[in-house]
Length: 170
Image 1 (cartoon, rainbow, N blue to C red):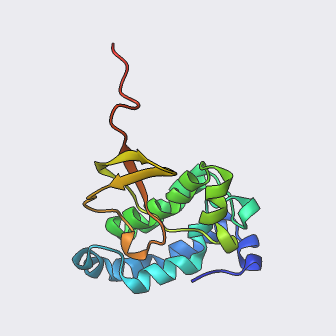
Image 2: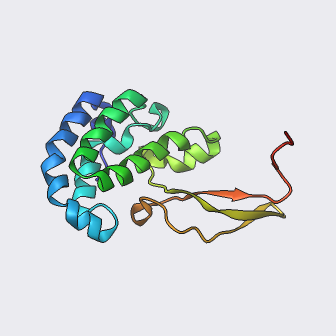
């Protein structure tokens, strides 16, 4: 599923989109199985990985494509036409590389290590609670679900720190 640096460098939004378009019959053929599983069928997941779509928002400095949002939506729509559930899970995982690119450099160095994308659900409900401890925070959470979690190597979770960041009065 991982592409070589040369393969990623050769990608264009059009190439990725054509590869995804070619997968529509496979995605559609596994739509019922994906629904039953509650996540994209493994054969579909691996086929999407091979298209290069997961590199879409990875910064070029880390060996990614750094393509724009319009191309993302065009490509995402092709997957969703074949299976909306698969489209949801795949596009969340692709898009979270954009979110990761907004983090501090140290986090990006970890996320994109080795010129790869990362898979990370972004979980927010119910929000976790965090409390300060020596050297950082201790987070207590019981998140219900995160799209893409079964393929993840990271998890981005929202946590609240009681007493900090309370909404200002109106």
